[in-house]
Amino acid sequence: ECEFRPVLCPHDGCTERCSAKALQAHDQICPNKRLPCGKCGEEVRRNEHLVHGLKACPEREASCCFRGIGCQVVPAHKDLDKHLEDSTQGHLMLLMKTMIEQQDMAQALASRVAELEATCAQMNSAREAELRAAAALSALVVGLEAKMIMVEKKAAQDVKAASDKAAEELKKRTEVVEKEAKKRIEAIEKSHKTETGSLRSELSKHGSAHAKTADLSSLRSDFQSLKSSLETRERIESRMSSSDSVSAPPDGL
View 1: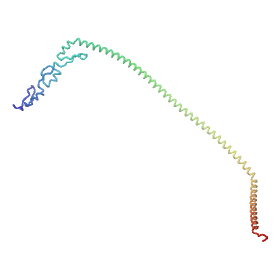
View 2: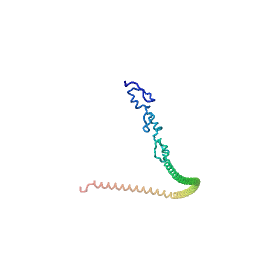
View 3: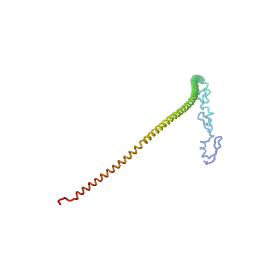
View 4: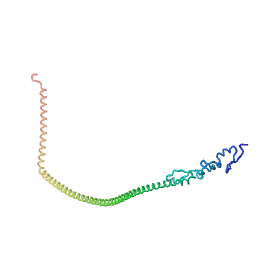
């Protein structure tokens, strides 16, 4: 027989057509081929094995409804009802234990809530006290600001009044000093005029004596000139006599 002859897939529901040589390879992947379930042995199509293992297999693992409170048994799905009947007392004990634990937890939570409420009440009281203190402080600050404004206004007025008073006093003192200086200057000028007049009168009285003194000085200068002329003449005559005695020959010659 030719190994390349066309053949149809023998599995129900499969319409694959291939050569006889490729039929074995297709058989390894055919989605319609029935394979036994690994847990219950039931033959199931290859493409339905996942759904069968999760939903239909009687040997699949089931979850006990008391697992959340401590049941550790993992029965097969077919044995779940039997497990619930056989473990009723154990499940009741687990339920009682869970209820006690929940009551203890509820009491602990209630105590914690009471502590938190007390803490919250203290914090609220402290916050209210802080708010009152802040309000009082704000009022105090407002009062101090108003007082400061008043003090600043009064200080400005006092400074202005003091400045005006100082200026007025300075003006008065300046006027007094100017008057005193004027009086002193007038007294000095009057004294100077008096002294000048007396000096002029004295100079006018001694004017003739001054003229005589000038004549005497003139005579004295003339006398000095005459004296110097005589002395010069005597020196010349002395020199001439000495020269004559030298030029004359002796008497024996």
